[in-house]
Length: 297
Image (cartoon, rainbow, N blue to C red):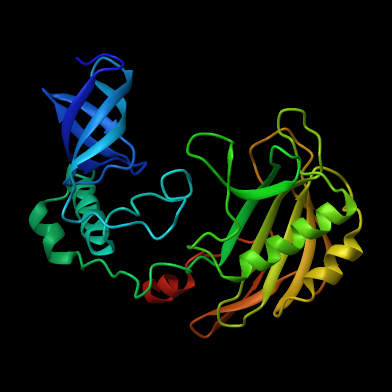
């Protein structure tokens, strides 16, 4: 068994469900964030249990042949996505093997039967800018200015980033417009600790085939003050089709409440999967990757 603060050298042989690298030292399992299969790393044990522990990667001694430079500058800090350090081809191979292993080990299926019916993984031609939906939490920086981005892993600390590379390019312009109006009228972001402030999240959706955009403010209140200002500013963005706000006054991690108040447009956007046209409201479920959804169907 290892102890907290032990420093060890370990080869990464697998990846956990949270994207963390998995290695073993004398039979003791370590989970190491930002390490990928094939890496040999120096790691410091941060939390030690009887049979496994969590360690922080201190240095990459020998990088994996599949290691690449992440496209996103916030990849290590942000909790939004994992294994960007692994080449996309290797990611697909890993996921295929994970499915096979789960079917065999957990499902109890015969390996030969799996080989007979399972088709290869179909990856994306471009595995970025594919998400048609994003929910950005709002907070404040040290100067009290509104900021948005995504939470660091296992925290509610916002890593400031207006342009996640998995999302649509319009996100940046929309979020800049929202922050501008918030600053202009002194509208405060929500503060989880004190349950004060107004803007909790901003939900953005886009119809990839139609080009229609939706913005829905999630607010800690019954009204959205200066809503005319928000609407006027957002309508400067091409494709803006639906603007609304969602009431969520609960002390909860659930993002959306049940009540939606329409400010502009029909209250929904439309999009297509194949020849089927869908109406998508702020509360609708709709697959976030329309390109792969169509291929899957």
